[in-house]
Image (tube, rainbow, N blue to C red; front, side):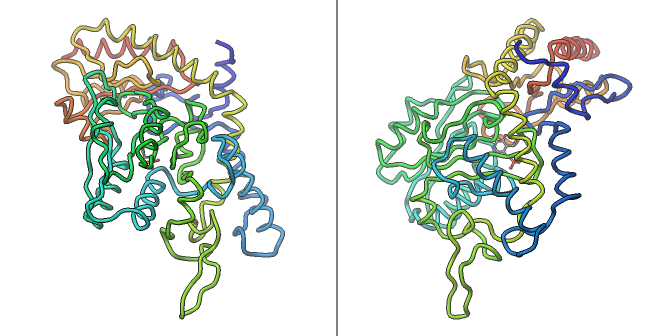
Length: 405
Ligand code: PLP
């Protein structure tokens, strides 16, 4: 491995502690990652040195905060290779980005009888906002199914697209299966039929080098808290010609140009979609998280996570009665599994007593659970700060827990 794991781990104060007198093994990174000292320092620095409300006041603190806030926008633009800064909208997370797009795109482009294709492996936050839209407009949701390996049945997509299809929405990486979806291929097909594409990048942004121009997606959404940054910050990227035609999502300060009782005009992009005081300190500290991630190198981090994935998978498949959901080759560092005869919740609760943090349950993906005929799974998800030693501890603890049942 080409980065110094020991040094990287030292950057994360929370990883240094013991849980139930055992070293913490944090394998719940798909839910949220931990933050390095650099991000914590950036938050502290904002509050102690230059906190003020952005964009409005003509005083020193507000000015400095505005510059730092807008610097993060530029860092995000470069990170995902967006064409312009106007296309980077700050939200409070992926969920809000999706709701914004579903509302505003829906208002502008969805009519009664239109169809929206949603994949079966989506997180609830990339299903429900589109269902709400469909309910409001009398549109229809069409499901793109997955196969037994946890792969999207792309070959069915062509047939699912009709002349009423307006949008395909799909996750870049599944939070349950780890499957990395072939976004470029889906986009190509969608655009060849005049259909727009929304991509949920919540599980991708910290693990894949994203290039929205190369992927040619119409929308892309992600959350800072899954990228070693603060919680309460997210991003919506959109194609400019779409964002320009879409009405505001929320009304309030900053999103307006002029307010009169006879009628209001709206601010230019991206401010049209950023009503009210945003998460100023969070956005500024997100800039520090992007610096940190780029300093490590997303590809280097992903290579190490890939090694961890292979190492853990090889050990887990030797355990009798253990089934892994999501066995595609193109996979990110997420392993969801069940063990015959033991409830996933019992496994998670017992692993916690060994100081091991995994996630159990439906992972906000009920349709996918229904597909596999299960209620939930145990999910271990890796970040670059995890080690093979931690995987050994996890697998040994898992075997002990299984032997108790
Ligand atoms: N989409 C996927 C694939 C996710 O994994 C998650 C969170 O786990 C979300 C969307 C929602 O993200 P957030 O809760 O940060 O809004």
